[in-house]
Image (cartoon, protein in one colour):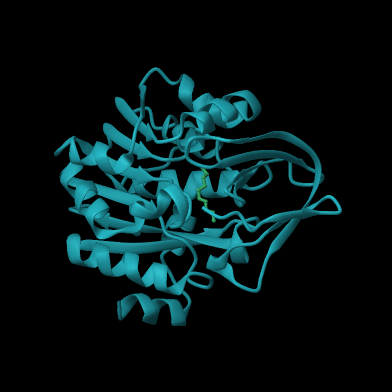
Length: 288
Ligand code: SPD
């Protein structure tokens, strides 16, 4: 994918046709890693105020300052919506942050992890060990392959599938299309559910509407949860959910005090509140 982002006078500016005319800039102290893998340009920066920052093809994937908000919500909203997740699949998110969060659920017996770009995993193991610790969990099996192909080869196997994709440009594009969602549905057990990176209803209206249309067509229960991540475009992002059984907009099992104390963003109240959308976004999704 063409990389439009720039570093000028020590400031990295995230420039992308998906959010035209607006850009977030972060001050950079040091380039820790910069290389083109088989799939994409991978950059790891030390920022002045927001910790390390992972950038793929010029797009910010995470900063150490706020990654917890995204990783906790994308992991715990679907995992607590399921009454008893035992077998799960995580697609994308080579940093390991979703694995770290999923690993907190002691009832999970098996975590399959599928990432197309092994170099992202290796860079994050080296530079972001507090996220990549997710790979140390003995329940995790890493599959370096295309998520789309993986789901089509694994029918009726998972209680929960989480898709931590980059944006729908570059290697992540197919993960926003209906055939992939059909594959996800087919890989679920009878009462399973999915949660996918759902972009922002402020910044990516067409994309959010399209995801809502797809999940409404395929799942009897569908929902959209959103939350704050200051270093993502517009400072917010959402997740698109589809369920074959469990209700999505509240936890379906208790969050123990011990579990809660490990977290910084997710609470049962935030889970419910994250499905309550601003009026324009509610209308947009209701009409999709
Ligand atoms: N606009 C960027 C969205 C990035 C979503 N994936 C981030 C990966 C963090 N685990």
